Length: 277
Image (cartoon, rainbow, N blue to C red; front, top):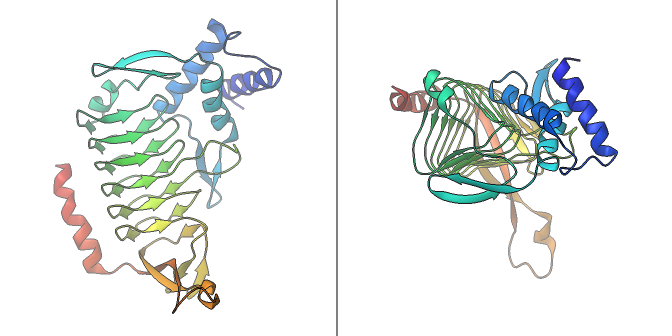
């Protein structure tokens, strides 16, 4: 256990014993600041891959929660607009140093989030506390990267896409989008779903553990993850509701079909690389 983890665990124990924002002094706030800086530098992450599986770093999620519970709500100003929160927005000078871009008028990056080098943040878009956005990744207009979500390198997130977040329970892994993934416009990825590396997901696809993935490559039905190197899209399968007397005709429920990524699909996604030059 490193010193920062030990300090956060100690604060969490004291919070359980009714430490409040009113009680938090300079030492406690310094610990919270050091924690946020470590998140923003990519030195700690809310989830990591261990033994081939993504697992939550519970102490990191506790540290994020402490930044809400041990801080007072107060006034901030951003772009001439007053707002009230417990955390300010993130300073972005380090993004320029790493060759990343965030366009004006609506690119919101909250404190405690990491954005890698050569990344592109289009406006309006939002990256929440604890999120990790890897090198070379494109976050397009009207996208949300939720709290603690982990997005890998060279990912393309199409416009109007939601990458869901989760803080509690602390033991639950957040949404994971692995390296090289391309998400079409209007996708929704929620509830700790894992999108395997180098997959291409069609527009308006909903990826959540409650919707089955029909993997035609391995000829199996899986839940909660899309295997690597797949092309995925929404289809509808017959629902048991069809048997109800009130339903005329058949009823269907959403499903996801996954096939091998085809060469022409990969070439189509690579044409977008010109946007990064």
